[in-house]
Amino acid sequence: MSDPVRQLAEFPLLEAIFGRRSRRFGTGMKIPSGPLAFESQKQPRPLTALEQSMLIASGTGMTGWTFGVPHGPDRPDAHAHYSQRFTGRTAPTAAGSGTPVLFYTDDDGTYVTNTRDAVPSRQHEYSGGGTHDIVQTCQKCTRQLSDRRLDLPAQAPHMLPPNYWMANQPGSTLFMPVGDASEQVLVLLAMVLANGSVVIDDDLGCRAGNLDPYIRSGLLDASAPPTPLSVLHQIAYESSCAELSFMAHNIVLTMQAMGLGGLFLAGLNRWSVLGAFADKGVRGLGFRFVSDDRWILPNPVGLDGVYEGLCPPYYPDMRSAVAEFVRRKFGPGGAYDPDTEGPWIDSERVKRTVEPYSDEFTACLGEIAQYIYDKFGRFPGTFTTMVLTGYVQAVHLDTEFYDTHYKPGAYLQTHTDHNTAWH
Image 1 (cartoon, rainbow, N blue to C red):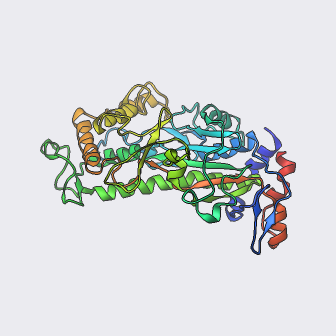
Image 2 (tube, rainbow, N blue to C red):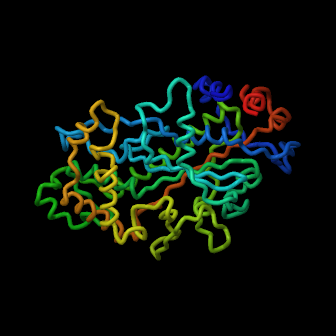
Image 3 (cartoon, rainbow, N blue to C red):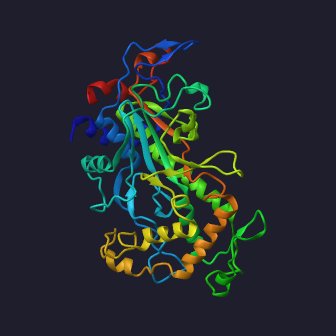
């Protein structure tokens, strides 16, 4: 293990938390006017492969096996069936859904790291400060999407004016955590149905689909408190935002320990970043969008062949998408396939206690999912299929700017020592 990585492993957590600041000014940048006007005398310096790898691993690195949800009242004699994946990563996700991936861009291109379906080799992938396996896993799960920096003009409507001078500038690495809310909603909806709750459309005051057959059969309990669609959507969106923020915050804390500048920011137009303005020459990440007269803005549904939502146009309808969702959970190689590994001493025995969803349960899940899609023209119904809420930019800090304009202590000792330690 190299010296800088050892120093990173030994950096105090509290120092990273309390030393965190948005240090925007990197080498090669310029503030043209005002009381903090300053032009860097250094050339923009991109992050090295090692520096980037450490940040990526912090944001989305595989950490070993999750423990899942150990018990559920709907199947008291079996292990709970709520988790979608047992691959542990550095940021938590609701019920182990594990949907987010990490896009990033630098001077050499645009990339995506997708560790959600990577298979752990042991209980804890990180041990004693060693990071080689974690970094190597991220590298294996990284795909280059283009050989150019993300196409994002420093002008409206693509970013807020205060970010023009610094966002996505040469030398910077811009990280973009993205979540698949279609899978997220199905995870939560399956959990609701498993516990017998009837889903209602609280906007129209009716049930969310033809649920009478499932009430008559006893799958759903009409006497139990119902679950409003608006609440289901709100929980799913809040969960997605939290998961993406955890990823971003992990990266930001690691930047403090490494002595890198940068910040968490939200002032970039997510539609521009994903690619809604491709027809106007701003390609962004190249996501597929669908439009509908019922919406003001188009809906990003996925990046073809790379990261696709569980919804049309990637599936003929939501019932087909639900079938894929169930396959991912119970099919060959799925979370509850007894032939796959897990965190327990006898993983096969534990997984064999979990019965796959019945045909009736799958049909009920498909009925409600299709109802949502038919009503809103998209899935989820009230927010975007692909969720992008914030960004992290990492740069090599130009300490001369802070020495010129700020009181002592504007940056950490790691920033002072960064060149010696990492270069």
